[in-house]
Amino acid sequence: MAERIIDLRSDTVTKPTPRMREAMARAEVGDDVYGEDPTVNLLQEKAAKLMGKERAIFLPSGTMGNQVAIKCHTQPGDEVIVEASSHIFNYELGAMSAISGVLPRSVPGRDGMMEASQVREAVRPDIYYLSRTTLLCLENTHNMAGGRCMPVGLSRELCSAARGLGLKCHLDGARIFNAAAALDVEAREIAEPFDSVMFCLSKGLSAPVGSLLAGSEELIVLARRFRKMLGGGMRQAGILAAAGLVALEDVVPLLADDHRRARELAEAAAQNDRLEADPDKVDTNIFMVRVNPPLDARGFALGLREKGVLVSPISDSVARFVTHREISDEDVGRVSSILKSYS
Image (cartoon, rainbow, N blue to C red; front, top):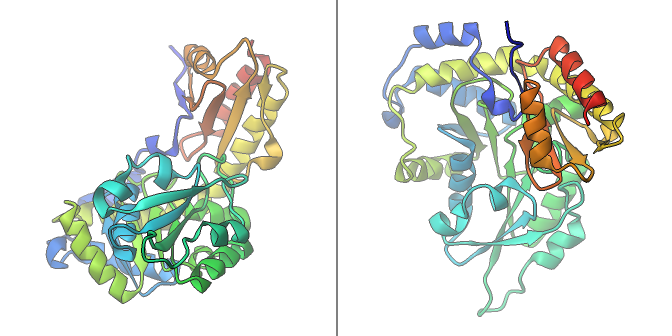
């Protein structure tokens, strides 16, 4: 009997837990476009409370949550400050320009993090022939920085600098609960300085579908209109929301184990002279492995696939590993042995 495939490509590959499936089957539902789905309403209330915001709205995806937030905060022709390797800038198909008619102004960060001086320098002067800078978007945890966490103090400093120049602030908090676990704070502390925050249920939290956008009452009323405009209005969505409620209750407490397993794998990779990994930079469940010539990342990923391990090459020389609920300590032991001896 062949060994099972160990899938470390992403935490999006997670499947709903048995309790999620049971909750989905039993979910009380209504028409959410009318605001009449009780399970969706319960999830939204819980999400708003967890983020320390007035209200929240359930959406099909994190990308839609980010783009609805951008549309709420901007007008066509505005500029939005983003970190150069951020998800919003690189992996959402230019949606802020296509949907909201705004331009990204990218700022290179260190480990995905900008400095307050960079935010101030990126804001356009108030001159009639220049685009207005109206929004700062940050990401925590930062995917392409290897799951690094932005400290709460830095978030507050960046948002304070932006707000002092008249900008709104949005957080792509797709994995905000991973950040909270790693920083040992409540998620609401991370979300506090932002006007809006989006988080995903369908990544490390193992729900099949869905994200939440949280903010002020006024923002969420507007977000509901834009969600409908983008085709995100769902009907008996309580079936999906039920899984999200279980995710928040059952899976959030398990995230620290994912982080520990990621560090163990990074430590194994660091023991191979043909690979480079820094366990000290593994904050959460994501880490990067750089391969040394003559290896390349695609060949490395193909070689691991032959051994029953899936990872994602993200450049010619770097592969991404992501742990999640379905990766066990036994899996970590098996992959660690493969990484130590890989040639």
